Length: 203
Length: 203
Image 1 (cartoon, rainbow over the protein chains, first blue to last red):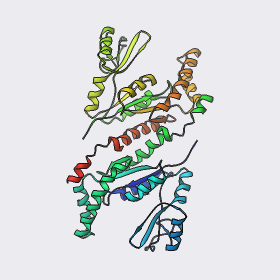
Image 2: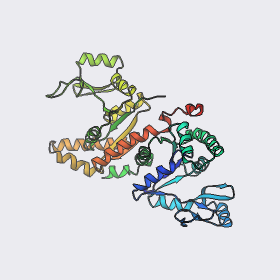
Image 3: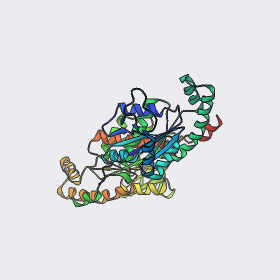
Image 4: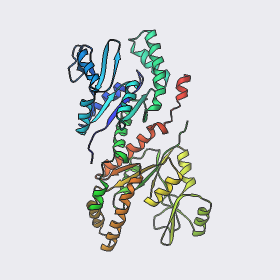
């Protein structure tokens, strides 16, 4: 009998709404659902709390963790490192919590190599036109940045084929409901089922 | 782009509550969920309507349908035949309806041979003790009948391993919710996904 929680990996292009979906899921959160906390070498911003927003690490500390194989996945973005600490996630799962990792496609593919029974969910925008509209509406990015983001989004959308589930975010509440259902359904899958068939025979 | 509905096969031992779960699902029914109607050679009982309760058939008519391969599955129970008409189910699925088949393990295994992409859900009682309690509480069956049902239930519970999902019916509303989630999740599975990835590239 295995009472472990699930590891749920959520990716999707910038603007697809994966962050909003995760927040929506956490707002109705059952005590069994948790968002993973990443480690990073970047400096804390105002209001960020160590162990809640991120685990803030010095570069030499982070490199030591890499050497000790302490990350499920990690990446360098410009001058800083970001990574998912293996022990933190695995402890939660062993406590029976379902842990959500909101990471990019490259990170997700590394998780896939390390943790075969994780559940991989890709959040899709309803269309590329809608994605461009959403990114443009933020009003925070230059035309060049928007074009770059759209280019990346094309590549990422093609990677959806490597995921177990594809959820179209046409409506935040509905998309979050679909993700919630995927988690509930996965727990009923025969290969994850916690049923001890022998105990039925012995009764 | 394929807008077909799902074929959902639901089985479970007598007393596990699969009928009640199906009624619960249909009571909150979206227009896309339908219970399949079986064909039978038995006589209509008071209040039963042809095409709603069953498709009532004469024996020679039913035998002709068997010869013409018009059933997804059929079985003879004592003097009567019962079967799932292929055309009726397939028409509904092609209209985009999700069709629920509430059938026994033998029938489900025949469906598995014919329709590979059906979704197979097994409804389990929380324990054999609880199952015996439920069957006994009906008060309609002799001790001999109860023992026979319990014997069959042991065999059926072992067959749960041939299903995609196992739902424990500890609570009708929760069990129905799990089945509903399985249907929603299956529609998001990559291999069923109705997303035309090429249309994203062409935009």
